[in-house]
Each structure stands twice: as C-alpha cells, then as structure tokens.
Length: 229
Image 1 (cartoon, rainbow, N blue to C red):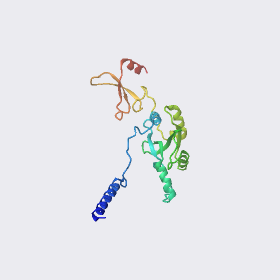
Image 2 (cartoon, rainbow, N blue to C red):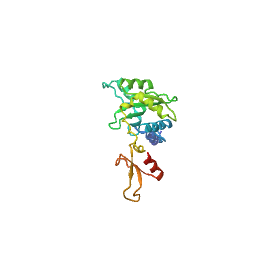
Image 3 (cartoon, one colour):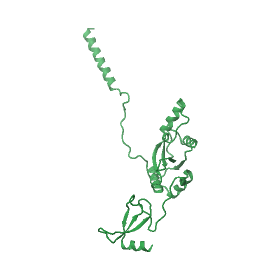
Image 4 (cartoon, helix red, strand yellow):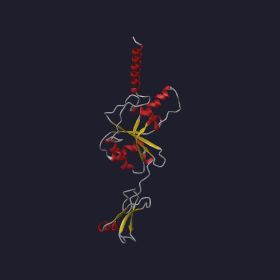
C-alpha cells in the first residue's frame, strides 16, 4: 500500500476521532435544557400561605420551601461516611413552611402539607424520618392535609396546639373606638382636616402614624355613625 494512502487514512481517522471528542460534553457542562417553573408553590400551598398571612399578619414571618439542613444540624460534628450520608439527606429534603419570629428570625416551628400522591425519592427523608429528626432536635412540626381551601379558625386551633404560638405571637391591639386600621391593625382615630382642599372634613386615620399613613375620608353617613359610636 502506498505511503500516501496510509497517510491519508491516518489523517481521516484523526479527524473522525477529533470530531467525536469535541462532540462529547465537557466536564461540568449540562446536557439538559431548562425551563422555568410557573410558580414556587402549588395551588394548595399558595392557598395555605394566604391563610397563614391572614392569621398572623406581621406577627410571624413565614418562609416557604426551606431545606431541612437550614433547620437542623448533626451534633456532635462528624466527618464519617454515615454523617455525610445523613447530611446529604437533610440537604436534599425540604419542608413546606417555616414560622419564625420576625424580630430575630428564630425558628418557631414547621408546617408540612401532606399530599397523598407524593412519595419521597431515594436520597430524601420520608415523613417519619423527618419527624424523628425534628423530635430529637426539639423542633415542633405540624402536618396537615393539602387542600385547595382551608378553614382559618380550624388551622389556628391546630397550630396553636402543635406549635404553642401564644408563646411567640404578640397580642393584637385592642379594637379602638373607631375600629382598627386595615393596613396594620392598630386602632383608628377620628381626625379633622385643618387646612387644604378638605378643610373641616373628618377622616379616620391610623394611630400608628407616621409608621402607617392610612387615612380614609368619611362621608356624612359614616361621620354620623362614627360620632354616635
């Protein structure tokens, strides 16, 4: 066989191998396409979050989709294989909602919604394992069935029992003579404009001013009712 033929064959093989190598994904390079999820929460989770917001307002800070590794740690600190496996499990496992004190973000407790169709994948902790870990760490946890509609009063009772919320939630201000501010919950007071386009007219304003600037102009009927009350 002529040397030129051998040389050409070697060149062709080299080019083919180069193409094959270059077509392989590089280390750390993703071979997947990604698309954005529509929402962080499912419909039942969003409905439950709205219920929590209506119950607590600014008295409790609610976080959603929190890693168990942000709530628990393994003590004493270990670096063996079993500890690494346990850390990987709590790092991969999330809980639905975490209630915190708004002042210092100290953890009050955990709420997990139970979906009958959901079963944990390998590498994630199941509910029993989560409950055992939480009990060991003295982390209160409440489990509720996932629904599209929630009864606020029933949820309040369940959470009060399971998480002892009265120890953490500041008492709401008492209802004022003219009701409470719809923005912040503080008592409303009757005000009379002393200048401007509305001079002489009456308003209901928030007693928490200037932190809250809620103001509502009263019509004659509302003014009469306010004075009578």
